Amino acid sequence: MGRRIASLEDDAAQAALIRHIVTSSGHECITFADGERLLMTLREVSFDLLLLDWELPGQSGRDVLEWVRANLDRRMPVMFLTCRHAEEDIVDGLGAGADDYMTKPVRPAELAARIGSLLRRACPGREPMGGPLVLGGYVFDCAARSVSCRGQRIGLTPKEFDLAMLLFRNEGRIVARDHIVAAVWGREISPMSRTIDTHISRVRSKLGLTAGQGVRLTPVYTHGYRLEIADRTLR
Image (cartoon, rainbow, N blue to C red; front, top):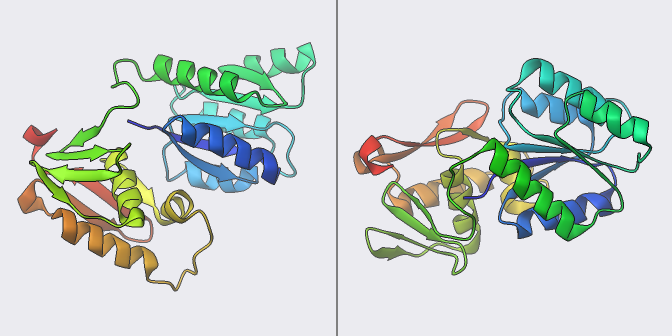
């Protein structure tokens, strides 16, 4: 099952490269261009790993790390991706609570390997990557981009499939609307648009996501949506 990873990077080209590496490894990647926005999101949304650039206008990656270690679960892995390569910088970053430190330019294979290592240490015992996502009687085949329930295949459009996968991967957690937009559409959507709600309605209807079916999808006022397993025997 993919993990939810936040990337703090204000250079658009670097942000795109990091996102590509992360998503190619089977994870979700939410990119932030400034530390203030990431800190606001961290107050409402949980992540499995943070990738932080150091030098940013306003709140730096170092500032974000200090807040995270003071306010969130200290077991959450944090890695610096930065141009700062002096020994004293590396020592300072690790001493402040970072779990790993990688200097730019980013080396894709090495970054993917380091991400995998950090996640294995932070989340021991979880299922290996690459297999189907099985939850609540639903089976998502990521390679074929298909979903079935109790042996019956369910037809979803590409966007509906991406949205359903996002919700199922984050079972039990609130998925913020901004997160949905970034992960599924990858672009800005007007706050007045009904696009997200329309797709949510279709996914709920096609997959039968109600308490009576053992899996429910509910809105969380002003935040987003949460998918929950109502019948614990279906986990």
